[in-house]
Amino acid sequence: MGTDREGGLRRPVRAAVYAVCGAVLLAGCATMPDSGGMRDVESTSRRDTEVRVFAMPPREGAPPAEILQGFLEALTSDDPQYATARQYLTEPAARRWRPESSTTVLADGPGIQVDRTTRNVDTDADDYTFILTGSKVARVDEQQAYTPVTGRYSQPVRLTRDRKSKQWRIDVLPQGVVMGQSDFQRNYMSVNKYYFASDTGAGVPETAVADPVYVRRRVDAMTQMVRSLLAGPTNWLAPAVRSSFPAGTALRDGVAELTPDDQNKLTVPLNGRASKVGREKCWEMATQLLFTLQDLTPTVDTVALQRADGSTLCTLGEDRAVTVARRGPVKRPEYLYFIDDEGRLVRLPGTGTTAEPVPGALGEGVQRFGSAAVSWDEHTAAGVGSDGKSLFVGSLVTGGALEPPVLRSNGVTETDRLTAPSWDARGDLWVADRDPARPRLLMLEQGGGEPIDVRVPGLKGRVDAVRVAADGVRIALVVQAEDGHKSLLIGRIERDGSVGDRPEVSVMGLRSATPELEDVTAMSWAGDSRLVVAGREQGGVQAMRYVQVDGSTPEGPPPAALTGVQSIAASEDDRLPLVAYSSEDGIVRLPSGAQWQKVIKEGRAPVYPG
Image 1 (cartoon, rainbow, N blue to C red):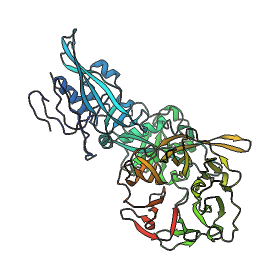
Image 2 (image 1 turned 90 degrees about the vertical axis):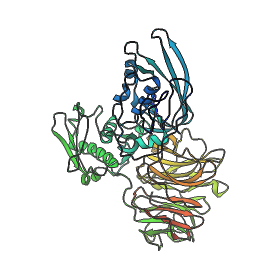
Image 3 (image 1 turned 120 degrees about the vertical axis):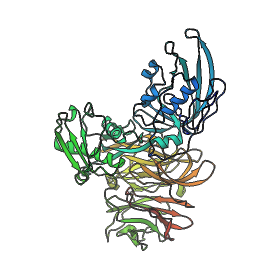
Image 4 (image 1 turned 135 degrees about the vertical axis):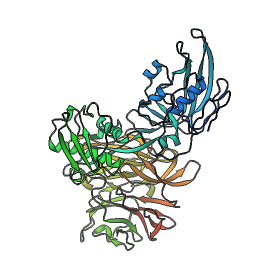
């Protein structure tokens, strides 16, 4: 902690200091002299996230160093509008500064350098200019969407003395907020807001799609999330989803904070834009809100929407929400599936340890398989032959004959042929052909017919693995670059009408989900916006971790270490254990709160439906 002393800060300061220019957040305690050099400031370690932080206004007659220090401290507080922080700015600077415009995340706390001091002829005072520096890790934009970024950060902050009051204030600072990575994790949290897939297909129920954003953890996160949901989806997801809220819908004027009652019901007063919606549309709106709020806190189980005049538009609870739309898997998986030592597709019920061949031709052993995928309803399966050349599809019904393959690859070697397949919620089958002469991402409608070449603008390299999310809107691709490194990219699936009787399908907006991994060896969806990934970190260390679709790291510990991981199976139903195939231990599973447990040695390529 800082103490009173000559030539340094004139008052005690907290151990955690976060510099923000434009809210530049510096973490750590630093003595900031009135002139001369300045030390870099290290980012603080994470602390108790429930501790509330309150800001102190500037002291009368404080010198420039203390003003800058006080401003940086004020930016660490839980003040919703940064009102105290603005007291450290000149009036014009306070009007211009928009802390909500962005948050820049640096690897460590920003470094501070004295740039120069100059004499202001008009005020007969010195102006102080400091430079804040660091290595960029990510940026959260005005929509609260997270994006990994790289490069150097360097922004000036200038202090000047007011001619009338003779008080030092900050008059030049960048827009937005900047802070160290650990401070970002302490101050912000990721929450999913939910929209509906734009094109779910005939006979497919309304599907909720997660759109993760970051909100300030202790600044009325519930109201923040409601406002964010009403504002619409983030730019990345918007082309593939829709909102049931009419354009321009917002909270009613004067609503400052939303709080559930003692019956766990949240009442949301809306403006006039939503006053005339019908019952079905209102239920959809309430479902979006309920799914969003339950991702923030499970205590809210009912949502009531109010018209602008205060009358009730509709009320919806959990029991009705699940009939309006589904979130996550089509149904809870009944089995875990894998390939046994005879090349058959077999299944394992619940927590059992005895596998049985699946009904139908894929479980008979007539054709040996190397990988497989089972449809979400568990009625159909697809298998790639053990040599990787051919893709077969069959019903999981006893007595069915093995049909001819629906797709063949001309790749010379097994690793240049077909990837493991993946089913989407519409019943369409996805697979990649790694043939160097013609690498393609393919989709087969309802698992058959002529394969559709899927456009992937911006793809650099070839697809080495494919997994479609349960919502059918997002897809995870392991892509091998020309230098041999494999990265995990997330794209959104867009269907743009038809050419003749065939749809045009594209994967758009590719973005990295694992910027810190050099090589990804296995991956699977493990939640509405989370994946589990095995790969090699920079420097050659093998690791398994959870990642968010936006490239951020979710809270909580990573999976227990496991060597020799070649494939992973996770369910978007988080009640089911993580399963993996290890070259050393065979098929193993990881129940919640336990260590890896061996399931069966003679098996490989485990999958849950999807």
